Image (cartoon, rainbow, N blue to C red):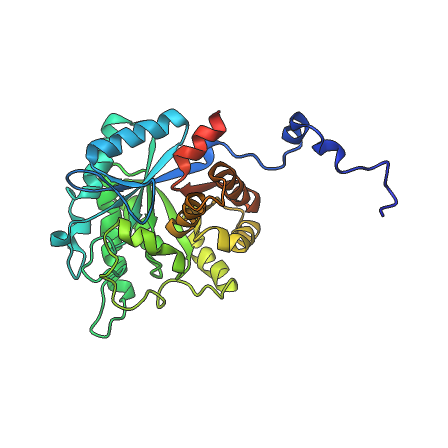
Length: 328
């Protein structure tokens, strides 16, 4: 028993709702959320692996952007489901200024100019083999050849109106190359949110269904995404991306890597974001479907955990649901 007891009772400030709100050390608002959205050609459709999540056509994407704005969500993140006929070994469709991603950016910016648009810079939605880059005859992803294409992809997206380009490929040196290219092309205010500590995780499965790359991947991504066993390496990755011009950094996945988020924030004092990935979302929804979980409570608790760990914001498929709860 503490010598301060009973003068100090820590339960005293927890005794009522108003007092708990007054003493809360971490605050979660809709402005802390980024809503990932999947865009497709033709008609939109639900994604079986992600209950409650759909692929949206251009009209649907614009409607979701309006919904996000009205809920107080500041940014939507776009991921394309590229038709199989447009996928190739080199992912050339990524450089098409009239590709699905660029048309979605323009549609949102024309209709909802006051919302931020974040775009994925990576080749896996465009390659026939499902990797994030150019693959040699041995199946190894070539770093520099891939980075050259990513630079061009980032410029195409910036010219379409992207506010934040987010290289998610984990190639060495690509952040600096993209920053130089953006500056050279006059896109000085386009932000880079670097997927700085992206792990080779088992939590990505439903996402690959969503973008149409499941079944295409030959091998795995362990030669470029990080080993889940490593944390010091994450700090080295972040240090490089910050030095190369990243405006913010991301840790992916989310909940299994809260320790990485905290270490990154403490070491660099830069804006840190987390991606609550598809597998994390699916686990919550599976628990709800099984009758053993309360969706509202789990969504808010997990998002609060990201903020408590040091995140400036979170990419989450529950963004709209969470924003409604927070605005209630």
